[in-house]
Image (cartoon, rainbow, N blue to C red; front, side):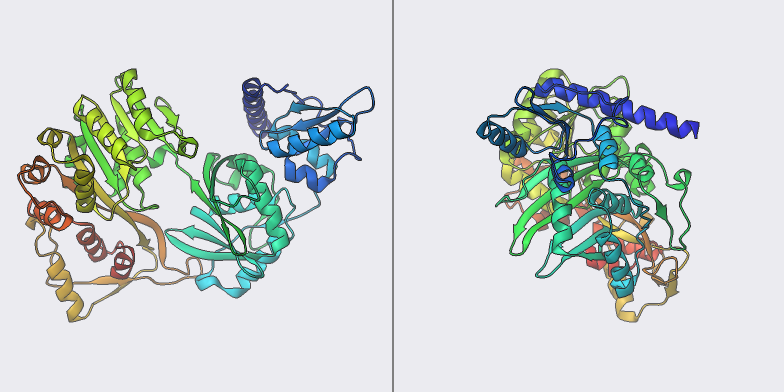
Length: 559
């Protein structure tokens, strides 16, 4: 118990210090209520409780002809609401004043305005194929969650299930809630439109977005998961309370919010970036011994470009951060440019790039090169200017890491050549282009071995025909596996593994960028890379299927 109190006190101290700093930046008076929020007189006739939840603010003092009405506001209080209050007060010849309070103070005061009922929250369980009884159970649960709890409840459950995304999709009569887990979307619940309005208002308030925008918006939310767990009375499916000590580890969860207006309302996707330091290791990327030696040799060089390509959700950020973490030592200066910052790495200078407000990666790359970095990570190469600036940085003595959206390594290389142009000097800049995807792993406790038909065997032999002999498995007695089901795991998959191809800048590949090869296209580049020994993502997938790590169906679904 003493440890729990100490932990809460530490979190409160961080919350108050952070709020005080932001108050100084914003020019708003800060109010520390640590010794007062439990005894502060409640002002009951200034704001309705739903308004307080919606705008994340509370009345602290009722005004009169000589004194202003004082409101405690938070960093999530919309500026538009403050303008409305100012205009209303001016119209009535009154005055208002604001004090910035921490989220902790706001929660404590709201627990007194709206005392928590003895509400018991059940953990969400994923059932097979969107089981209707489970959907109904969770839907009913969400309809009874307190207004100020619904967003945090969804975040907590998504984090518990290791979901990468929360999808909120408006429909004619309801709103569908789905979690993306191991790359697959699972229906979780349906919400009534009224309940979703409360939820979307909480999302918009927390991420400083508008609830009535006519265009797509992007925002950012941070939550401390341990603090969320301690604020809920959680029980398991047997109705047994889950002790705080059993609610996994505390960690900071960064979330990117994307909203878009649709024909039935505002849809939202919450992307969860649950990185931990122990996840960011090269050894967990799934490379074989040969690839790992090549990989470590490439990133050990003091200059050059390493690109990781693939669609959204293919694990590019994890790979880049693993490289950054491996290179992070006191002898190097590492700087990252991110939109937004997804994971805090001690010892690394991380710079947010807000592209929604006119900032560009290219301008920031030029700026940070004056800071004498050894390693630079660019969150994403999106345009010609950034591509050329990154190449110049790689040539002039920096190790540059970047992501790029492309189908595979060969397509990315062809597109990059198209962006930066033919130039023999650039052959010394690009060291490797990595293409990757994530596929679901079979649950080792339930997977079922079988012998495939002859057509499948022939396809496997043809697919693996040109890989190096030292990496070719025995193809005489081919066995595959399919997912099995159990009560504990109705899907047969658990976790994901990476399929990674490495297009290394060899003498033959360099001819495409030096101008010696006139027809620069992805197919020709891929064929050359295969002759140089590159194992493609498809071949990697087949090898993992033969090893019982995944299925051919899963590989084909992803690729």
